[in-house]
Length: 258
Image (tube, one colour):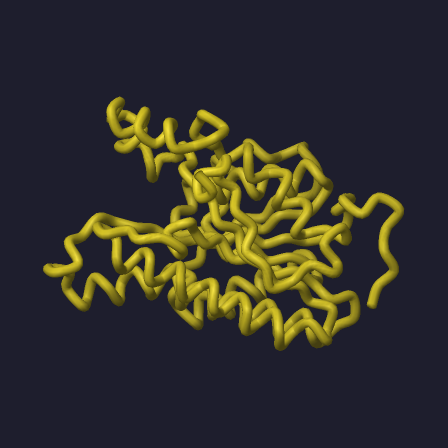
């Protein structure tokens, strides 16, 4: 076990990977990590969006790397891991954020579409956790694994059964890896964002009636933004969470308690 830092939230010299880190929630996570001093490796499928994201993070803290990666591919995850290690020599924190959702009637949903969602949202977390966890257990210093789940994992989402199932699976993976890796000083947790304003939720935000209906259910009386994930990302990547593992942290303005 490594010695704790005087400032437990200081990420200087540490390397963090954020999949899907070129936009939305992922970019919010990456920004928080960079501000805390971490080197950040953004893994995503769109190199142009990644370049734009990297430019916006430049100068905030550590170095920024972009890696083209489809997390549903074992070969791509292995190659991205190698590229990150070649650049920085280590991975101290991995945020499995890449994922997407779409509306579908559960009585008409095609199996191929069900599997397509799970390939990125669930298989992607598994492949990244496996690769990052193997690296972290083979060196001193432990590490951090974080999966971006959703409040959809805990309540009914009638028109997104495949998305909800993928996030429920993520929660089970987190508990499994947390138990297995705790002896190696690797902490594993999930984040469950609530209603966050991103490109993915743009249509919902633009629907005034729906937007206001959601706000009435949120005790904080507002939608969240990617910036609301910055601080929790730093906490989960830092020494401050050295004894915090196997948990699901909701960042939803109180939506699920009201």
